[in-house]
Each structure stands twice: as structure tokens, then as C-alpha cells.
Picture (cartoon, rainbow, N blue to C red):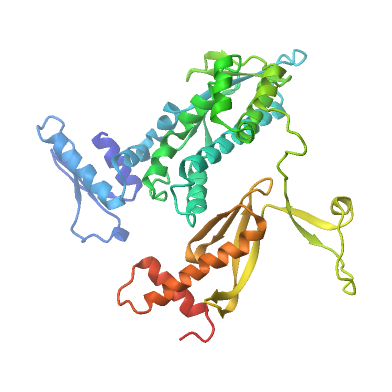
Length: 408
């Protein structure tokens, strides 16, 4: 990092040059940082001095402390961020197979490949995260941490050559670092695109050994989620996909994957053995209250009723059942649920108390949440006798003091 880059960083953050001599440029910080009016930061400018590097490093360390960043984050902030992304990118080229239009690509072709690539990557990200951390992270926080990972680890377009429609995609490794507090997750996130490239993109589907390795590494369901979108593009009749180097020179063009290989990767499922697929639906329907029960047919859902498929939905809790004593809230609290595709897993969250649960059965959603809430209420009762509490314990105390009726 040069002194010029340091000065440019400070000026972009509203620092002002107030003095200069043969050895230093002095910059004054913006008022909102709260420094004394007389304070200014010296940045060395004379590279011939023997202490130049030492003085520059001291200045950088000071800036890192002020802005609570490490040196890498500071470095990317001054213009090298995109280059860093490119250095870890995966590069592709798409060629139309349509001769009639001089092999120009339809927008649908481009969209189709990008959609399939993103779907494959996101499914890999989720599956790999669950495998590595499901038994490591607390059940109450794993969903919240995964959402943070997903927010900061999406695929980003980092380079493009329009004429040949070649492009590079990468994931961020720097932004959001402070938000992902779990070190093992942060380390995994840093390398996840390289893992995806090695375990998915670089696979030779014509190699019997590599295909067998996939059978051993991923379950049938996992392979379908990760590889089916990608193979859909590889076997497209409308375009061809190639992997390139950063100069967009072809390294490998995918050849069509034969049906025999596809059948091995995605074996047919016996309908009797197939895992049921559920959808959560919101329905508006008139009900005859004189009858004890009624039946809704699938065709009615599709044609006759006001119904929508819901991937996320709320439910309310009006109190706590603790040791056979029910304590009512002043007002019901609203809990959020997000359903995984197929309805095989549900992510339950209540942000005011930092509750985050993973539930495998729909019928267990309320029970597991109320149980978690009851555990916090027991903790709350113990905390009432403590003189000192940490930040989260204070949140628990404030929540129950505020929300419980007739609270002592």
C-alpha cells in the first residue's frame, strides 16, 4: 500500500490536508470521528528516508484502528477490490448453436445459464454449510448465521467481454467479515467458491472415476440439487458452455453428457419411496360452521380458491407455559417461519430475542419455539437476582419485563 493510496483513502473519508513539509503530509479528520481539534495524522512522503516504511506502517495501523478494519480491507477499499474478486473468479464463455442468426445469443440463453449456475451454486453453498456446521453451531443461531453467509457470499459478475459473451463470476471474501462472527464459518466462506469450482465446475462427467466420486460424496437428493441445473445448461441444444482463463481463452468446452451418466447421477425414484413434497399455502375459503369437518381437493386449490403458496409465513404466541403456569403476554408476539423448498425443513426466527431454530416437521414448529422461549424465561428468572448482566442478558430481562402481564 503506497502513501498515495493511504492519502486517497483518507480524502474519500472526508479527511482534509492541513499542512505539508518535506517529510509529511498532515491530514485532519472529520469532526464526527470525535478527535481533538488540534489532531492531524502525518503521512510520510519522502521515500528516501530510512524510516519511511516504518512511519507509513504506523500510519496504516492507526487508520485500521480508527475504522476497525484489517489491512486487507483497507487495501481493497482503495481501488483493488474488483481486482481481488477477479483473482478468485471462475470464467465462462457461452456460444450459440443457432447458425441461422450467425450464432448470436438470445437473451433467454444467457438468462438460462446464469439462472442455472446461480441455482447450482446456492444449493451447493447451503448443502456444504449444513454438512460442516449443523452439529457445530448452536441450533438457535445456525439459521441466522447462514442468512448472513448467503447475504455476503452471492455470485457477482466481475468481468465481461460482450462480443463473445465471456464473463467471470466471483464471491466476495472481505465485505461482511465483521458480521460473520464465527471464525470457522468465516474461514469456510473465504474458500467456498474454490471448493465449488473443484467439486462441481471442474468435474469431468466423462470420467467414470470422477462420477463415482460424486456418488460417494453427495446423496441422490444433494446431487440433484447441485448438478441438475448445471447439466441442464451443459446439455442445452441452444448453446455451448466453456470454461476459460481470465483472458477468456478456452480451457475446456463441456461436451454433452450422455443419458446413461445422467441416469447414474440422478437415479429414478420409486414413487412409493419418494420423499413427500409439501407446500405451505395460504387459503381463503367459505366454511360451513354447522359441519364438523370439510375436505379440500387439490383441483380446488388450483382452480377454485383464493390460494397462494407461501415460502415464509408468521405465527403468533400469546404467552409462556412454564412449570404448568401459563403467563400471558400483553400482546401476542409474531414469529417468522421460512419453509425450505419441498417443506422438509423450516427456519424459525424471532429477532428480538435472537431465537433461530431449524425444525424438520411442520407440526413441531410451535412446540419447539415455545420450548426455546420457556428456556429463556427460566434464564430470565435466574437473572433477576443478578446484579451484573451482559448485553444479551439485559435484552432478555427487558423483553420479559415489558411483555409479560402482571409482571412482578
